[in-house]
Every structure is written in structure tokens, then in C-alpha cells.
Length: 336
Ligand SMILES: *Cc1c(COP(=O)(O)O)cnc(C)c1O
Image (cartoon, rainbow, N blue to C red; front, side):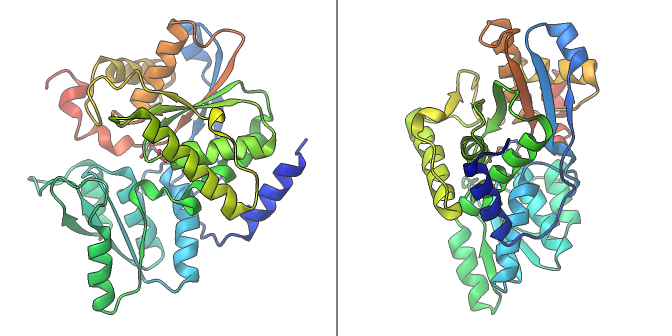
């Protein structure tokens, strides 16, 4: 049954402006052939790679609320930033196209030959790309927004990864969607965590629903100070709770696994390669090399080390990222 907290949360989410961009609810399936091969707990997969917006992914959920806000404010342009292979930037470009808005992306790096993967899709979707050198987290968004405003545009700045309170609220909504599919049977939800909005929203949502499962954020970025990232995620959840008028979970509710960051952001190693091959060959599901390959690798490792056992019931949240397999073709086939 849905508790009082859940009812308050759902009513608050219903009041936020939202623009439909994807297909929801996304499917949930048990990974039975994977389990037969691997042993350990029952594992489910939540297919947010199938949200449908230009190859899908978790940013579609955030963008439904962020674009809802942009349209309510009368904006005509979306501005965001990330790495050259950012899934978030590609989905933002698609959202802008679907709503008749302009899209400007500030991407880390320099132009480099024929565009591939997400960058190719950004181009096809008509986004304007601004190269930002070493800045791959949208550091120069404010300058770009100021220039667009001087030119008479009405831009909405969307932060790195779409992770502000509005973006994270979309994952409190996703927690409700999951609850309606599986109830409170799960012990763990495992998800890749990078800008933190997905983990913040899922943790807040489960808490507000009174659903006791642990949300495990598998850290994708290397942080000099891991406590700073955990503070960032719990602060973001608190801001989101304030936006929605529900109670915020305390810091102990946030779980981070960070022992799988072998070589830093976007560096593909055996963990990612093996996890991608295992799920592809047992279930026919493609993971990406940067986020979901690493997060699923962490899940497999946790099963092998007995951190997750047969008594657990685990859901792996597939957050998308498929287009990045192509530019990582060398690392994925061991030819790098
Ligand atoms: C952005 C992204 C994530 C991480 O989500 P955050 O909310 O930024 O933590 C995970 N997987 C994929 C494929 C992504 O594009």
C-alpha cells in the first residue's frame, strides 16, 4: 500500500510542469539467464535505455520536467554541457528538436575528425556545438547563456547531467513508477551515479514511499574526496525534497560503491568489457562502456564477493548510453 508520504510525493510531482518526451513506464524484466550463468540473487532490469528519445536513456525523465519548466517560463532555447560523448547532451538536443527549440551544447575537448556516437547524433539533431577544451562539465554555460540573452534569445541553462532539484524530482517520480511495477519486494537498486540526480531522486523517492530497499550508487567519476560527492548527492536530495514538500532522507540512506573506478571517467577496462559481454551474451541486452558497463560490473563483482546473496532481490537500473559503444569500439574489442 502507498503510505502518506507516497501520496504527498505523488501529488507534488503531479503539480510540476512536465512535457511528454518519452515512453513510460519503461519495462522491467527478470534477468533469469544471467542468473543461471552467474548464480546469486534474483536480478531485475529496468529498461530506461528504452525511453525512446533519440536512442533513449535516463536523461529523458529529467528533461520531461526541465523542458516543462522551460516552456512554462517562455524559453525558446536549451543550453547544457558535458563531455563530447555526453548522453545527456544528445537527449537534450533531441528534446529541443521535439519542442521546436534551439539547442546549444558546450562540450569538452576539441573538434576531432568525423563525428561519431553521441556527437554524430547531436549534429543530426541540429544542435550548435561550442568546444570548451578541458571543461567537460558545462563550466562555460553561464557565459554562453549571457551571450544568447544579449542576442535576444530566451535560454534555459540546464546544469551538467540535468542534475538540479527539478531534474532529480524526475527520479523520485521514477521511484513511484518502479513501486507500481514491483511493489516493495526489492532489497537493492543498483544504478550508475555521475552527476548524482538519478541516485538522489531514487533515494528520496524510495524513502518517501516507505520502500525499504537500499539504492546503491556506483560512482562513475573519480573524486579526490569521496565525501564531497556523497554530500553533493544528499544535498541535491534535500533540495529536491524541499521542492516537493516531503521529508528528506538523512545522509545514512545514501550508499556509494566507489571501488570500481580503476582508471577514471570513460576509461574502459576488463570490468566494463566483461560485464558488457556477459549481459549481451546471456540476455541480448547492450550496456554502455562508460556508465552501465561499470555499474553492472560492480553488481557482478558484488555477487562474486558475497556482498549480494541469494537472499537478496536486486534491480539493475539500465540508464542507457548505447550510442557510446561505437566510439569506444577499439577498447571494447581489445584493440586499443
Ligand atoms: C548521465 C548518465 C548516468 C548518470 O546519471 P546521473 O544522474 O548523472 O548521476 C548513468 N548512465 C548513463 C548512461 C548516463 O548517461
